[in-house]
Length: 483
Length: 137
Image 1 (spheres, each protein chain N blue to C red):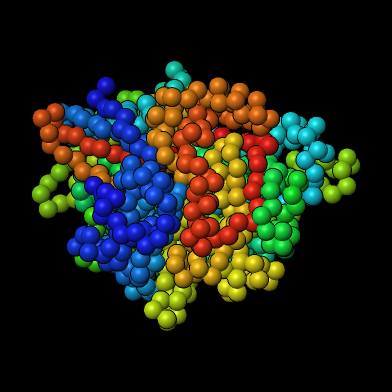
Image 2: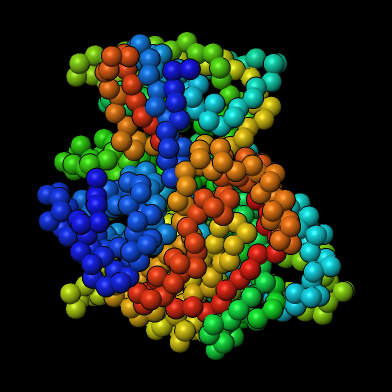
């Protein structure tokens, strides 16, 4: 059990569990949090999981955790760990089952007043065109060879097939395609799960949400991002669906024997890993990248569906109804990146699980228009509460492996939320506040109740005060579609 | 019911107990169905077989439950009747053979994405065998 007295206070927003806390740690754990949020974090086993993550072979520097962190399985949600490339390990469990789960933000020039009378029909069309819920099929069906092409090309597959624009791709992390994807390393079973789910949202905490840009905190950056106060925006949150879940399942299973072969001892079997330069590590990286590319296409197709709903709702009624991509970010991912460590440039594999890449100004790989501002960091709040658009900073490159928070972060168990909250009551409450809700499952809705989450403003306030992101705009929800 | 839901911040967790290993596997499968709120159609009844081998019993359990997750998502099937045998020999990989009987799913409250190894350890207790298991949802 980790207690407050085990932590060293670095500042009001940064704490550390020193490497000396436990004999098997290979580096410290750095926690971005206020004292108040820390008390919530200490309420579950997330810090124990962060300490366990610090035992990964080849770990470089500190395991970093964000203020929205909470208990997961193996690796905590809200955690970031870097391992030396290529001798260090890659751990499927430190990336998660929903490989390349992420968020896409689309901006518009549609003013709230003009949209309000049509919001109800917009929500209905979004619900119709963005398939959601348990076991739902996607909007595009392909055969296996086409699926393999899609997994290699990522968002370029969507462009070639008329579902994306060049601008969408330029404004997607990694341009919507991880190099080195190897569909041959994706099992037949994973492919079978992926064939019919392209362009679907699934269930859980995934959603499509229409927001209004309620406040702009940095006008110059917001203008570069294409965000206008009082205008509509759309957030899309989902990942690689059953294909990604199966890839992770397969490799967590395979790596149970790999750790024995490589003599790796770990405190939790969900953290199993293999050296990146081993055949097992290479196979997982190839499969994981293929699943990540699938997820980029999935969000691209959902964006296409959202545009279709906007067109049907607003075209011919409003002049500028188009949706322009602000950015698409990943928050469950493992990527080889170059970071400064002890004043040297070092290649590392950054595992982010429930943490958003937050590259600062001047970082290679960002679109030219974001070179001055830093990349957009998309932080959706819990259902019915505000979301934030932040920008990456130089400090995030130095202190948090170029990462920031990914959401509000759960604080109440799903079981308690289901017990304490009725989905239909919550729906009425949200509708009473003018938020249109389209949800497939009332119990699923209850599990995602705002009271089950931390205060997103407090989470964002912490990362901003710590300097690892800065505020650009705040979004208020108008309509939410979920499974 | 020889299982109970445990508190977990983000995912779902169960404690399961049974007098022997085969029953432990079956009760965990039933617990998983219960968490997901599976309701089965009366007909048609379906039958599937499953076999696996693994270095340890926990891996056999994860394989077995992952098979059920796959059938739920891919074939819209769930199972409520199991014939299951586990062979364990010292120094040899364990083997599991199962006949799964069930039906199409009428409704489901929530999908389980995956079965995790997080702190998964089959323990012998006064109740027989016992585990705590976490599912990603």
